[in-house]
Image (tube, rainbow, N blue to C red; front, side):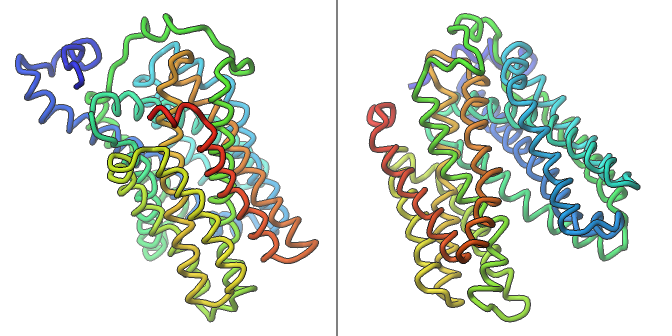
Length: 407
């Protein structure tokens, strides 16, 4: 059982009532909602940017190669922020950095609607990625701390909120395009939505005492003594590489390999996104019933089965089902791994999450280009078969990690 007597140390004092039962039944639910909405806001900003890429490409008259080069500015910004973000969150607290990070993320989103030259867009993307990483680490750290207030698993629902934001962002984009609003007008609208979201929810975010962080072993981003974090990062790497191939290549696969007619080209991507979102909301139930170890092992095999099914049976129905399997498989991995990393006994939560997310992000960054190179030399089906091995790696690494045997 959780000892709720510590609530007066980590929750805003103005909201604490004499009865901790009331705090548990009502106030903690509000804390959970606030954290989920910060995850939602983070995903909403990214989905908004992605929805207007074609318009910005047309406005700046960019070729495919020009756009591809400029888009690298975003991950470069994220990578350069990674050694700093964990330390900053540990020093100033996840609550403060999450608030400033989400507002900065939304602000630099509006900057992406202003460029008249390609270098300006590149600079904007760099800043968008840089501050986005601070937001990512801080919000995920909040997620771990909020999870500690509940006996049942809730981490999956936070990541489900991020996925849900993808659909919401796409829906708002359709509305903006219907009214012929420019990307800048669209982005300013989103800044207003995010600002309102922050104002209505920041008071309910978990407060943590910095003393708890200072008492932990001092660690460096580049010197990791808890080797289990490296292996958690590798598991996340395999998952993110599998996600990356779905985000960037599912449409191409349905067009060139499946030969899907017309608008059905997007069926693969849509089926993947739907099951990933559903899976993340179901993840907490599955983890609560079967435990994180069993869920991770099965998730890895589901990812591999889905990818190899798409390779062996390249028809519309089979591939749609296959991509649904991949979506459900990847949905469970990141919430479980991030929660396990955030509860490290030797490394501050924000630093642990930075280490794991840095390794996993490389999978998202490197995976899609590698797929392109393999496809160029062989075929896209061989590329999918290559990534299919990663799901097996997830299962095998989970079997070997002692930390999951104890859960």
